Image 1: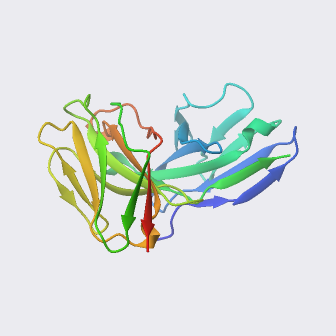
Image 2: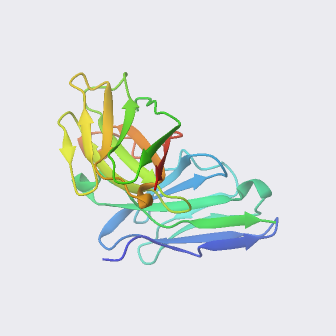
Length: 115
Length: 115
């Protein structure tokens, strides 16, 4: 059973460009979470999605950031008009449906560098 | 979620047991204790969780005090690959009625296993 997949692993964008980060959850998992880790800091929750629904986006910046988890395909975290402060590691996690959601399984992350 | 306190760093000799403490004096009756770790440049990895009984799995053991105000993660035979930041997290899991799905990571304990 493949783990959580994230791509790209490394992404370089110039200021003002758009960044698209993709996350494929583990097989059978319908819950996806995005976290951000700024340099030398801990992970911070951004958003929690189920298929076609955003459940909790309390950690998302109010502007430029959006997330989706369509019926088909991976979850996408989109950052528009990137700025240097967006440089960070972005981790996706997934969990099974319902009462087995004790643990979240994390992907290897996407390291975004804004130049 | 209850706040946790962990030492900033610890050292352990290879092959010896690593005992990582966590204080969670304000934990409520339905909050679980979770442990994750993050090896450098990788995504966090779930280790173990428990409510009030001691737990053991193939990775580690979790000892929770009777009053539940603190716990200890034990890696019985630490290897160099166990060098990582270890996070103690307290929360009510979603299936128990918790509405806070996110994991709140503090600064954790940097465990360095020395040869």
